[in-house]
Amino acid sequence: MSDQRKNQRFDLRLPVELIRSGPNTVERSGETVNLSSGGVLFHSDLPVEIGQPIEFMITLPTGNKGTAVRLKCVGKVVRTEAAESSSVAATLERFEFVRVAKARAS
Image (cartoon, rainbow, N blue to C red; front, side, top):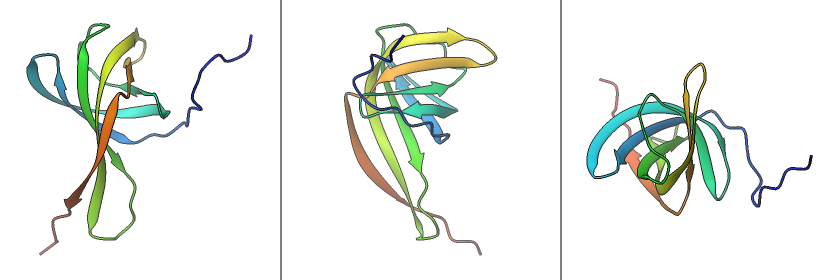
């Protein structure tokens, strides 16, 4: 059976923070499993429904430059899986890069 996906997936374990799911504001942390230009699969304990809008931030690795780069994403839940930890697959309908200054150690 061949893979029918339109976009190449990359296995990346990155921190993800769910900001909003549906009309209610929530904040939950999780971790990505894989990413593509069209969507993301991540682990989270947030209960979501298929078709529900979702907003999340993915923290990208940047080294020691003094700023963190985050990807603020908006999409829609397309699949959920309950295994060892809950997995959520969501589309990546739009995104923007957000720079966040890191706190300096005193």
